[in-house]
Image (cartoon, rainbow, N blue to C red; front, side):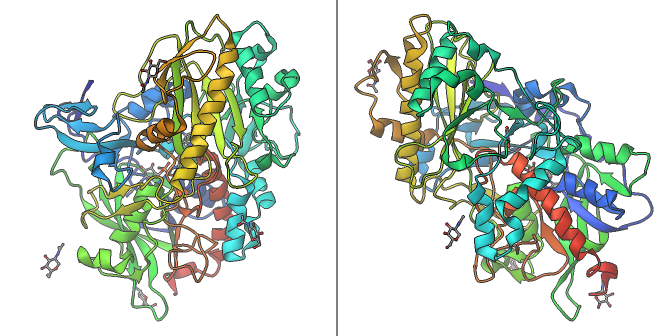
Amino acid sequence: MRYRLLSALVASAALAVDAAPAAAATYDYIVVGSGPGGGPLAADLARAGYSTLLIEAGGDEGDNPTYAELATFNEAANDEATRWDFWVKHSDDPAREMKFKHTTWDTGDGTFYIGLDPPEGAKHLGIQYPRAAVLGGCAMHNAGVCSLPQEDDWNIIVNKTGDTSWEAHKMRKYLTRIEKNEYLATGVSGHGYNGWLATSRGDAGWVADDSNPGTKIFKKMAEVLGLDPKHAVEMANGDILGADEPKDTTNAFYNMVQHGGKDGKRSSPNNYVRATLADPKKYPLTVQLRTLVTKVLFNTTTSGLPRAIGVEVMEGASLYRADPKHIPGTKGPISQIFAAKEVIVSGGAFNSPQILKLSGIGPAAELNKFNITVIKDLPGVGEQLGDNYEGSLLALGKAPVPIPGLVTALFRTPSAPTKKRNIFTWCGTFSFEGFWPGFPTDYGPNEFECALVHMAPKSQAGTVKLLSADPQDVPDINFRFFEHGGEKDLQELVEAANMMREAWQAGGDAVRPFEELHPCPGMQGDKRAANCTDALQAEYFKEQAYSHHATSTCAIGADNDPLAVLDSKFRVRGVVGLRVVDASAFPVVPGAFPSLPTMMLSAKAFEDVLADAGKLSGGSR
Ligand SMILES: Cc1cc2nc3c(=O)[nH]c(=O)nc-3n(C[C@H](O)[C@H](O)[C@H](O)COP(=O)(O)OP(=O)(O)OC[C@H]3O[C@@H](n4cnc5c(N)ncnc54)[C@H](O)[C@@H]3O)c2cc1C
Ligand SMILES: *[C@@H]1O[C@H](CO)[C@@H](O)[C@H](O)[C@H]1NC(C)=O
Ligand SMILES: *[C@@H]1O[C@H](CO)[C@@H](O)[C@H](O)[C@H]1NC(C)=O
Ligand SMILES: *[C@@H]1O[C@H](CO)[C@@H](O)[C@H](O)[C@H]1NC(C)=O
Ligand SMILES: *[C@@H]1O[C@H](CO)[C@@H](O)[C@H](O)[C@H]1NC(C)=O
């Protein structure tokens, strides 16, 4: 497969700066990054009356239909207008890396090669991990899938820090505050109707049609999951964001919810930031686009701890080398901007640790290697990188499975170590096999998949490490998948694949047999093919698992935890006036999908920042 690399063809727009801040170079708050963590927080702070500068490396594609419509998310994630390509590793084992089928190479002639038999002289890039540099962050190119963390994913913060404000039942109020529910009748308890984040879902009515092979599969899935197929219609409309059950230990179907409106429009921090700017109340929000924050500035002459007083920025588009439009050698003018109260870093799970390290906050040995003055030796910065493991059961049916939507279920596989559900699946006529330039592969109308997301990976051994002190450079990212408890997690994925495969056989002669593409290539009839062993499938998932929900690289943790980067109020340990508010703050992977949990976390952070606003005013510390 070859895809055109556009970088050489795009004319330089390197120095365009949008909405440059007016005379004042000092704000109360500076927020770095406008994704689910930073975007809503900046808008909330401005609405509370604080002068706030939101700095975003990317531009604004809010009116671009590819981003404004949720349905075109694959195009958005491939689009060079916003794409940051991180080329990551999944392990320390080069031989294992060389088995990943979508390994990507730079051929040197303006094209990528994807596969394991690269042309002579091609440069190995790695595994593509797309991120969106744009107003709204990755919530502008993601699929918008919403689900809540498992309750323990919040409660573990209480256990670690003693801060009871993180109790799962207390976190729900942030969902109610931000949500603008468009799929339920008004007034359902535990939901919000006046927030900025539209939520909606499709029509699951097709499940009422018993002659649909998809319905047959759905009902068999119910059986396999220990549910009563008689309640298919009711189950297909299950509310995944509902408040009213001990969800985490109950297998269930849901009607998939996305952060978008009934009209198909994407809803994201982009909308909220723009609504805040446009509001007649003229909130004191300034948004500076196409600006790369290169470091946080500190006052170290204060009597107490070093204090964050602002940021250094480099202005211009495509300055970061993850940007395929970056032109080698391009730099922009550097300047400093000051914050009277706080700096809040929300660059996402790769960039927040990089920004902290460039600023002198991180493992001292690593900073010393690059002659970065150590402000605070914090060994946990860039550690504990975690992610959902994702894999898929993908096949070609004899004919298309005629379902107009998706089947979504959360369930526990037999060997899961606790009573909690460990797998999120969505099944339908699509193919999703991870990321590479030009993804996904279209296998035609007969393609059928159950995507499998492991919600509770036992290992979070990944790292984000500097390769230089140059802020335009991309760090080294290694997920170290399956490092701890990997055999168990793989077995759980295999069990999930076996359960779904079994359910598919109920689809009937109209659609089967299924010719499986993976994990067990070949024809699957009534019974699983004899050569489709658990061991073979585990090996497949180990080599081919993919991910796109990175978290935990600046994790909240206990006072006595050497890897804790933040306290329970998002404050960076050992300095004053600096927080990290984004997916890097989660100590454990928050369920199956981090976007909504990160927006909830951002809403919580707003309260925590306000609570300290009086204490930190005026630069007196
Ligand atoms: C293709 C894809 C599909 C996904 N699908 C889903 C889904 O369906 N559901 C779901 O829940 N999650 C999904 N996710 C994940 C989800 O979108 C992210 O977990 C979430 O956006 C993380 O939010 P964040 O605020 O931590 O970081 P981000 O969204 O990454 O935002 C960080 C922002 O900071 C900016 N920034 C970074 N560094 C700097 C700097 N130095 N200076 C200035 N600005 C900077 C970036 O440009 C970016 O806009 C998907 C992710 C991808 C890549
Ligand atoms: C929190 O600690 C209690 C008591 O040790 C334990 O029973 C519980 O499982 C812990 N919960 C989480 C989420 O870690
Ligand atoms: C640093 O703090 C000291 C002591 O409070 C103060 O006098 C000085 O002006 C501060 N410097 C900057 C750059 O803010
Ligand atoms: C760090 O500084 C030392 C002494 O000035 C110099 O020899 C070394 O090359 C520098 N290292 C880097 C990575 O810049
Ligand atoms: C397993 O058997 C099927 C036929 O049942 C065949 O198509 C497939 O290639 C075999 N796979 C392996 C790995 O041998």
